[in-house]
Every structure is written in structure tokens, then in C-alpha cells.
Length: 549
Image (cartoon, rainbow, N blue to C red; front, side, top):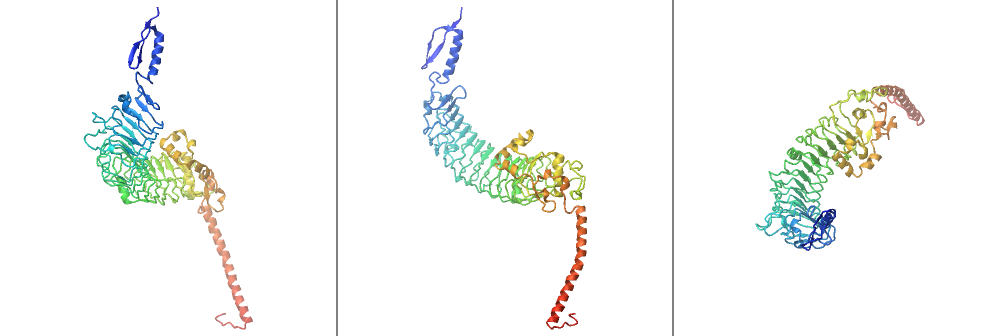
């Protein structure tokens, strides 16, 4: 006999008993009822234009619904279970007092990309709750013109935000000054984004008591300087992003715990001794960015104490000269970006001698005519055009940049004479990847996250590789046939110098011949001059004295 069971249905919070049905139908109906309950759930209701899910994350998702006013969350019957509140991409302009008072488990609040210009100071206040459970707040891409007062601890009756670890206020209109007490109520923050605002100054000790802060983003503001007492001695800051400001010198008082420092697109024209001393106080830096500053000069040993530095970006500057000791101490450097320095004409041949972990070297778009790598066993000046010396027979120092995998040289005015031979030998012996596009790199290199990110964001990179290449631009002499060719494709016997032995001998011989031929020519010209003078004097009736004769 087929077994039957009783099914209970929910209707308006009251349960009624249905008829008895077969068990397999019972299972189907139960499944269907469960799925349907995700939308109704015994009295559960959601806002008409929102998506509410109480079974998978307890989320109220109202993003991009065209809302102009925040609905009454207190009337929402499942508010007590909500952990995520997403009202991004709407037209909201105001967040009222105690807007989240009926959400005791709320953890993530997202109101990005609205038109908010004011946030009430009591928005997180809730009766009977001393500490708000909110951990993440996103108010980015709005019209907020000052740090909302809800992040200040106004009084002892305010609900505390000690659980808040991540705050995004980027892309607003905050400025021109950040008060010292602006973040007194969120001292346990770990990540703070203030990028793309109108900040010009920050008062001393603004972040002094935020001991857990490890990420601070101040990119693309109008900051000209930072007070040395901005951070406390116990600060654990790891990442500081200052790209796109108006800094003229390296900020002081940066915590020694920092591992990433971005200073690109500022106005730092020289790295002075004072700046170098500030860098020496940052021994834990792993990534350092000075790109797009107009940087012209770097003092020797500027990175001496940065033994864990892995990525150094000096690209898109106006560097004229680099010393042999510029990178001394940066023994762990793997990525070096020197590209697009149009005034950089030479590099010391031993500048990379201590960079034993260097993997990727960017030198494209400079003014380099030649580049010496290592100390080859044979001097290029001793190699004549008839020599049998090639990359297969020359010895390249195995300790010079032993881990180098790829380099980029395109766009340099390379002079293809014998002085380029050490570079040719180095590339061929080491089998280096040269001037490769991102999609032409070997897989083990192309998958490198840092490399991929850089090549992807350099918009002109791909076209420049194809159009400019590493071509010979000189010499303009009897060997000018190499001009316009890829320098690696030029036979090594054609990479010759005028001061090689053969040409020195020929030049000396021709010089002697020309000198010998010039002597009688000079005597003949003097004799012709004297004869002409004598004839003119006789015709004019003048006489020449014996002295004149």
C-alpha cells in the first residue's frame, strides 16, 4: 500500500493541514514550496524593485533601481536578519537619522554612485546597541563635500563603529582640509579610500591613532605636502598611495612598516640627499613608484637600505644621468622601469652589476645609443670585420644579471657599431626575450601579474613595439647600410668601429699619403703667387727692393 503523509502550508502566518498525498508527490511539493518561499516565505515581503534573499546571505539588493528616497527599512519584516544592504547606482541624495536602526546584523553598506551630499551623523545609531556590527561602508562616487560626522565619535550615546574595517569615500568632493578629529570614531579601520577628492591639506595627527590602518589611498587630490606627524609611531601602515597630487618633495614621517609607496604624477624633480635619507627610513618597501614626475636627477645610493625592494618604477621622467651606485643596495630588485626617459643617453656598464635578481628591464623610449652589459672575455674594439668572434665563442660574465629574462629597448637611437657587440652577445648567450608584445611573451612570463598589469595599462606600448622597434639609426658612414635594420639581425661582422686595427692602419696610411701630396701643392701655390706679384709690379712701373725680392 502506498504511504502517504500530511503536508503543512503557510498562509498569512497561519498554518493549515492539507490532504494526504503520496510520498513522492509530497517531496515534489515540498521542494516547490521551499523555492517559492524564497520570494514569499510565510509573511516575508520585499520592496517592489529590489531583490531580497534571506536564505543565501540575507541581502537586500536595490542597486540600479532608480530610487530617489531610501525606503523605510523598519517596515521590512526580515530586517533583523539582513547582513548586506546594497543601494548603489541610484539617485539618493540624503541618508536620514537611524536609517539602519532595525538592522542589528548589518555588516556591509553600499551606497556608491548616488547623489549623496549629506549623511546624517546618527545614521548608524540604534536603540539598545552600543556597537554597530557594520564592517564595510562604501559611499564612493557621490557629492559628499566633508568627512561625514557619523565617523566621528560625537558623544557617549552614539553607537560606536568599532567593527568598521573598510571605508570607501573615494570620488567625492571632500576638501580642502581634513580635520584632526575626522576619523576619531573609526579608529579600528584597516582600509581607507579618499582618492579622487579635493583634499589640499591634512591636519597633524589625523591618522595618528588609527593603529590598525594598513591601506590609505590619497590618489588624485591636490596635496602639496603632508605633516610629518600625520601618522603615529605605532602605525602599521603597509600601503600609501599618493599618485596624482602636487608633492614637490618626498613626505616625511612615513611609517617604517610601509611596503608599497606610490608617488607617481607629482612634481618631484630631484631625489636629493634629504629625500634619500627619508627613503633610508623605509627598509620594508617592496614596491616604489616615482613615474611621471619630471624627475631629472637621483643621488647615488638613494635606495641603499631597500634590500627587499622588488619593483621600482622611474618611467616617464626626464632623467639625464644615472650613477653606477644609483641602485646599490637594492639587491632584491626584480622589475626595473626606466622607459620613456628621453634625455637618458648613456648608462654605466656596471650599473646593474649587483642586481642579481633582476628579471625584467624596461628601457624603451629613451635616447640610448649603446648599452654595455657585463664584461665580455673579448673587447669589442679588438674585433675586426674579418674576425670569427661570435656569440658562440665569446664568454659573458655569468654573474652579471644572471636572472634577467626579458628586456625592452625599442625606440632608442641605437648606434650599430662595435660598441653594441657586448649587448648582442649578452642577449644571444642568455637567450633573452627582447621587445616582445604581451601576447608574444613566453607563457611563464606573460602570466606574471605585475608585468601583465603594466603592459596592459601602457596604452601606447603595443603600437610602439610594432612601429619603433630596436632599429639601427646610425652610423652614417660607409657602413650606413645597417641603418633601419633590427640591430639583432645585423651580422656581427658588420658591427664595426672606425678605430678597429684595420681601419686605424688604413687611416694612418691615407693620412701620410695626403700629407706627402700636400707639400708640393703648397710650394706650387706660393711660387705662383710670387710670380703674379712680380708681373703686376713690372706693368705698373713699380720696382721691388732686394728685400722684397
